[in-house]
Image (tube, rainbow, N blue to C red):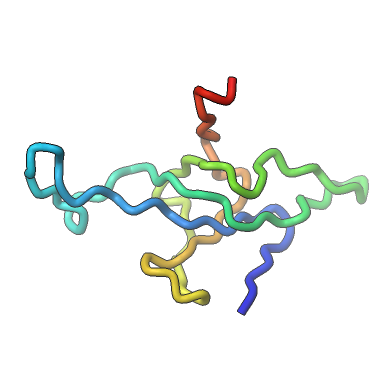
Amino acid sequence: MKVRPIKDYLLLEPEKLPERTAGGLVLPTKTVAPKTIIGKVLAAGRGRVLDSGARSEPEVRVGDRVVIMRHNMLQTFDPLGSEDGLALVPEADVIAVLEDAAAE
């Protein structure tokens, strides 16, 4: 099944959180959830339709790593058999795009 977001929605694959520190301590990923989520954009909608009828060009591109607030993430789902599921979020809920320092 192929998923194609509409309007200004993004399809994200959340990054898996580390389960242990470098020293071997177990991190509680189930009980203490971080407030932000980092994810890779797998697909993006064509953009929101403005009042004038034109489409706004999305600022986020497929392949970007983005940061969103956990409470803004819609329910994750698993249409493609991915291990952790996927998330649909509106582009407006993206609070940052992570850029590779080597690319600059």
